[in-house]
Length: 91
Image 1 (cartoon, one colour):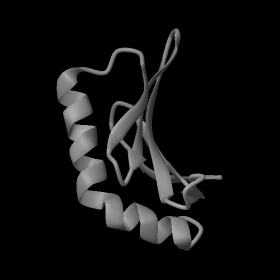
Image 2: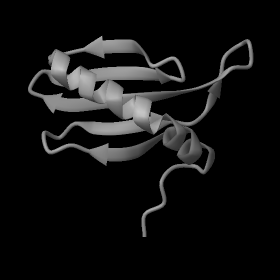
Image 3: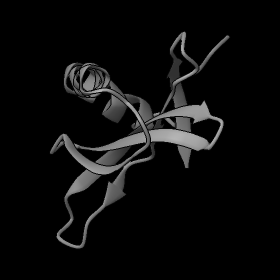
Image 4: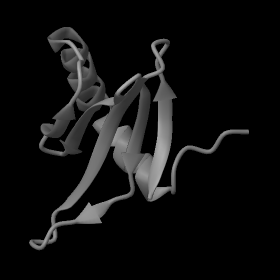
């Protein structure tokens, strides 16, 4: 399952997964940044807590990717918190 986190002015949508477990029992979350294009989507997916990019496709600039990296690094605790709660609750 995925949960919406934010939407950027350029239509980039930020979503995060539920908490998943690797075979060794380590918990992880995937955070995706996706922007619609005429050809499909620009996509960058990070895995937390390693902050590694596990998928990248399209035309995000190096500056945009760095901004996304900072978002996941600063917000990692929130992504895990909200994943445990079943997403963000909006009134």
